[in-house]
Amino acid sequence: MTRRRFYVPLESIEDGIARLPQDQSHHLRDVLRIGAGEVVEVFDGEGDGYIGDVSIHGSSVFIQNLRQLPSQQARVPLILAVSLIKSAKFEWILQKATELGVHEIVPVKTNRSDIRITQSKIPSRLERWNRIAKEASKQCGRFSAPRVRQPSHYEEMLQCEDFSGFTKILFYEKSAELWTPDTGTFSGGVVLCIGPEGGWDMREIEQAAGSGWNVYSLGHLTLRAETAAIAAVSIIQYHINLGRVYAE
Image (cartoon, rainbow, N blue to C red; front, side, top):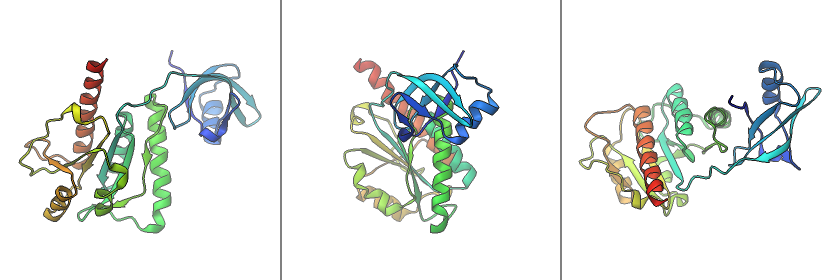
């Protein structure tokens, strides 16, 4: 039987004991009806996972006698930069990209982005996006949750110093060059960039090419933004894992 999993912030794990956040305590105690002494799994969202024994003290739930689980550290960091699109579709991308092992997600403000988020609403959106990522990590068995960055302007994203050393790929449906991944170029990490439903404008494509990004097509069909994002991540993860198998 699969063990139940719960998210615990790193700062709430100390001396072999994890204290569950209030929402996770409620879910364990009142929804799942897990009792004291049962064995569950916890993860800190930073890359470590443990199994331990449930201890209940009033409204607080602790997981004690923690035993660390084998590391899941990814060998090749994968970042998904995706244009802001309608909330439901963007959140679906967050969930599925998490399940597929993406390291970070960068919301990007492009010329044809479907939505505009005012500065005052960004904190609440980030809180929601990170909660979705943590819940998806919990569901799929990851120990780490992808970092969801603050929305970035397109030009800032292209020049981001954090991506130096990464293979940088932008997908453009009208590109004459079909993407044929080469696993030998991925060792330093990969950034995949997906545009909005309305597509890129030519100035954006020129900016990407001029900033050292590789501009490719995913094929002759025009894909929705959320389809393109998940297709690209799935393809790259297949090639990364294929390269790892051969290396081993």
